[in-house]
Image (cartoon, rainbow, N blue to C red; front, side, top):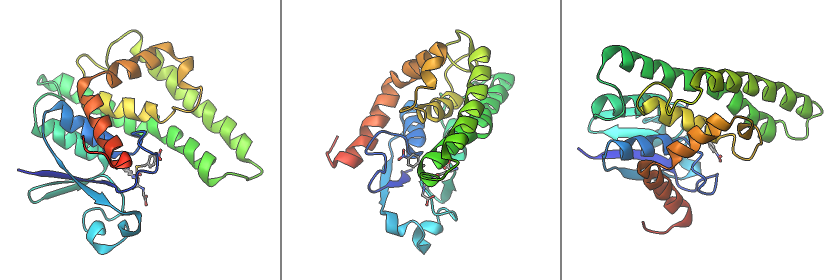
Length: 215
Ligand code: GTB
């Protein structure tokens, strides 16, 4: 069955792989599933055809036969449940992997996204630097905890899982700041994950959308 994902027609990050379709591409590469891409122009995000796939008018979306999904976390979890390779078979380990996936989305990602809000939407406001300081403190608080929890572990909980895809992509959003470099084990974790062949294939595919080159 053909899988189709919707992505930016013109990536805002110039192919840095920071938009959330990267998570979905990476998960599909890890489980060895081919997919097609629907390029959505910015002006069509809030039109009916795209809103029918995602009521919030965002990317990524995922289509597999009659199934249409939005929300990158839900899509990656679906892929991990549908195809082997991204969730442990042991029930308890599987529950922990799903817990970490939610931790990445609900506990680690919010302050990191908030930093972009301060940078792009509060630019020029008199309070911008104070907000940066507050948000950066919240990010460091979370990273201190994550770093302590991971120690020298290779992955979040045992084998590489869907949770690592989400967590690493969340942490990558700090690229361009010096914050992640304060945590050598987290920097090594991101480097280890992004060295995976599946990550590299996914990255190349999204970059090709930006450069307009065939793979
Ligand atoms: N919770 C949703 C999910 O996880 O799928 C959030 C989806 C989302 O924010 N999608 C963004 C979008 O469609 C693109 S990824 N925005 C259009 C809109 O809301 O109207 C977010 C993103 C965009 C660009 C960069 N960048 O340039 O670095 C990084 C992340």
